[in-house]
Image (cartoon, rainbow, N blue to C red; front, side, top):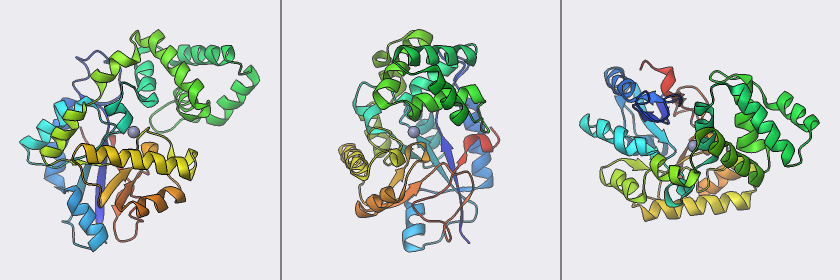
Length: 308
Ligand SMILES: [Zn+2]
């Protein structure tokens, strides 16, 4: 049995002193303590180690642990990489192409920042619903959506999940994007375009990660829920993300796919195999077992599952 603990990170920054003290993320000091904890209790392995263990059955050290960082935040360049380098540790980074190459903010990040700036989520639900009504959605449809999607999970209450799901995938793409931008302006008071360069790494910073020996893999081009688009659309998205990897000096052989939101289907896995990917990582919550797990469906734990 080859256990591998894969840890997933998103925001890592000095949150309390930041412009968005309400954002849900990991405090930099907590990250440093967590690296100490993980280094003491696990062997931190590189992406190459994990690929070799899965593809070529080479062995991993006991209590192997692989650190993964999603979404291409500037945090990863400014705070994470220096800490990893200081400790001679390796991390795997998964920036979505659109966030790095274009002046856009991912819907998921618009939503996090809207949530972090609202003093109560009830206000967000009413704002969201009024935007929907203006755009021709009936109250009855909204009630049905609430009933179907407002299901609390281990991190968020029902209202929060409702706002997230509506803006992540329930509403049609153009409409949800428009409403997310309107609500961002309303609750955060910034335009998304000016916010984008603060939030994400630049292309040059991603190259710098690669030059410093960090792994950079695919998190898609547009950060889509891949299971909600056609196989042709998935193929286009994956190809674009590979072109991006190539442009920043990252390898496109035996590469790693980190599915946005963990979402994928059989088509995705077939495509990954045809594009010479080695691994796919999800958001299923448990320790991976490289002997029995499908290498394209590896589960991860969250930073919140460990002491900080
Ligand atoms: Zn993501």
